[in-house]
Image (cartoon, rainbow, N blue to C red):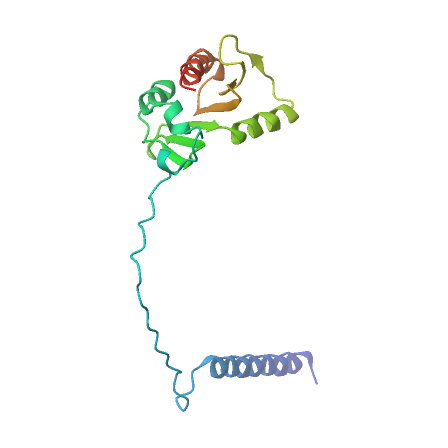
Length: 186
């Protein structure tokens, strides 16, 4: 037998095996016409109308005494900080708020975190050895790093982050001023 006939024979076997496997798979997955599909009847009795779920978390959903992040920085203040129109604040829960720029640009976002979330971000950034500068006159203590400012007031940590494609040094003063305004609301 020459190598050409061996290759031809192997090709025929491989083709036959592939076709057989495909046919078996199709038959195994197909529905049988002889066995009817099972049927079930479900009866639902409504005893009480369900309350409508809120579309976004808001101040009403916050526990008593909780800080609502969207109330610390207004829409107008977020737009002024970003220097561009932003969408309305979207609360991830009462302790975070995000104002986002339009999808068509420019890239801009203002995020506000209050409570444990803000403290956790600060702790992570410290552990990563981010460079912080003290911010005098804001809350009980305040710290600035590129495009984020943290402050503590009355036992509550707040973090304000700016996402903007510019030199972070240009954002420092406006961010510190906004932090002072937000601290005044606590």
